[in-house]
Image (tube, rainbow, N blue to C red; front, side, top):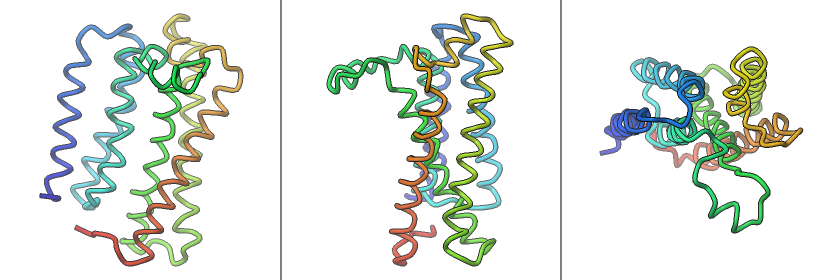
Length: 200
């Protein structure tokens, strides 16, 4: 059953993508939010043919894909997330922060590749390289959002930027990416270093 997990996750994404491609809030924003995710999915699919990620790694990688697809349809600031906002008394919609946290989950898959392909020889590098990679991607994406907001349509640019009036939005987004990566690496270490990790 576990060997079918990647295929089921991909099928679920394609279904979600198709449904949420219908009448998004803003088509320009929808393209801007979905093109990077389509690229990620394509890269993971190609890599998976050469390197069999574990079902857990696939599941963790799918979280961002699903959340980002939802965010692209509504725009992140308009995703129905009021139950969280109201419960904790937040001043803004934090759905985008949850999505940023899930970016860090890719650190798990990166560590998996590094260890199973024996590309590093120390635990320090095994855990620090994925962390640095996630931070680099986080910074790169914030630069992309900034340039899209500056060079693109002002209204669409503001929606993609998604700061919701928070002057520290980019820094907090990168912190969320970092915390997600730390959580993923802690999970990886707790499973792999105890020999309880499933390689199937």
